[in-house]
Length: 143
Image (cartoon, rainbow, N blue to C red):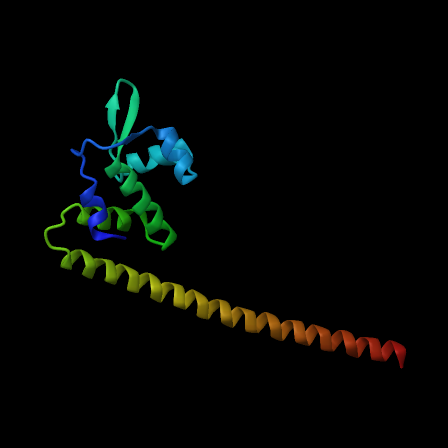
């Protein structure tokens, strides 16, 4: 996640705007998912009548949200990190928090990998034993 990315797309910048459909197509999401992220406070579109109008800031926050989800972060963690990035004055606390979150997720993934390796070893052992028993049974029939 780029520390400056969200700050550069400030809500007051008169840049491009997007409809919910445009963002849904761009990020391959449903409009329902985008509204869910809105309900979570991750994005805050403006209104034009009954239509939502998303700014470049919203688009960036949505992009960072999806990136955080791919990393395995919870939406609460994503929101905390993205909200921190909105204040570009001192990025040190933001980066430190990001490193803490990443380290926790890395440790969790490494534990899951170790668990998977152990399970695969067990499956291989059972396969080997089943093959041995089959071969033994075939020898008895044939012999």
